Image (cartoon, rainbow, N blue to C red; front, side, top):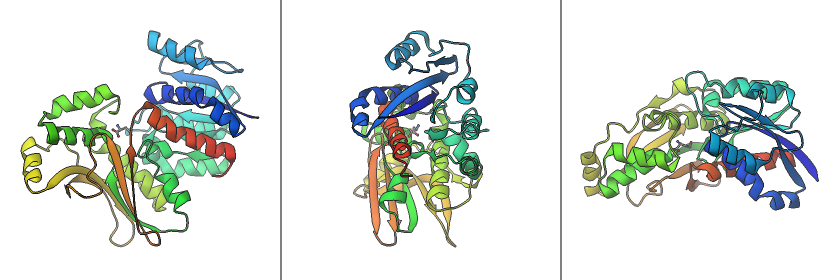
Length: 336
Ligand code: HSE
């Protein structure tokens, strides 16, 4: 059995989802010869560390009872630098101002020879090439399937399953909160504020929900797609962004009367007619992109395989953990 030592930075919905996934999938992982051991977990309150493996059930219980996983004086950076482990899982929230604290955690992890798996979009939307260079320089893997589309596979789909194809464009719904808000406003005639509150209760909205409704979250995801799938070199500042805050119930019902729905669509296309843009768009009700609820969807246009459409849960604790776990397994199997 190959022991894989992990740290988890950030112990909110995603970090706890990762802990739950590791607990649930212990037997499944052992059939692949993988024995995951979490040697450190940190959150805003501090860290807990156990070289032989943190008791994950107790850590989740402590977090829920006290609001923090902390059981020592150590900080996240102490764990990353000083506690021996193989993979640092960064589940800290997105910050589009400077990418912190995730950016520094990732750099330190690379410099200490740790592979990084992340769900945090901010550092990649701001400093993608710098992070990839640093991972390469230190001979470690950097994987981030969870940053785009949650459980919906899109990076691995384009890079592995569709290997050999050129992807010409990607368009889709990449934010579950906005999709939920627009769907509920359309179907139930509910107010924007009311439905945003519901999305927050579902635990799918960003820590700062303006990231969702202003289109910032979708823009970050487009940057990650553009850089990793199209080989572009763009940052968040290159995206043309319009959010959903000005969409009125009247515009939704006018669209409905014409057989259309309004969706927040992200689009990326390389080349002379290249674009990287997020904006509300009219979509015919029977179009593959017209999915409802919290779903994400992406339509990839490829040269050999033609159009490929994928949809799935773009947010949520165990759903995002599913993408993180697949990246951990990929690193363990060394097939990335
Ligand atoms: N707030 C995001 C969403 C979470 O609603 O899709 C996943 O990135």
